[in-house]
Length: 143
Image (cartoon, rainbow, N blue to C red; front, side):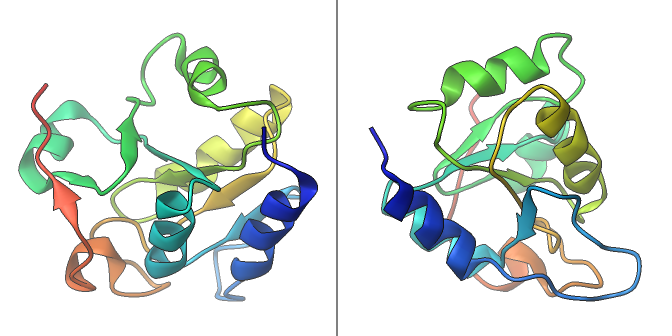
């Protein structure tokens, strides 16, 4: 079971980038791909890749990411079931940060918090170069 210290550590490493068009909702923080990778490796964070299977096949998955297609009718329940416990922070990543930002509200409305958005995404965005261009590890999706 994760204690408050683990949650605090994840939130403390997350930063709001303050860039136009991206303001996290209440209960959401932003984090860079390297910070997310570190927290995933330490077991402090569940990383969910919300993209489609064809996208996972093209780029692979971020190391440690759980692929849960956002179009699944049971998306929220799948995320809830994937958590180690009800306090584990959940990070969302997509291609460029648009879908992950949109889904944060959906999870918060379902009572899943805290949420960490990865606004750079896998491919990069206004927030930064993204997981792939940063040269962070990926694994092949085997469907």
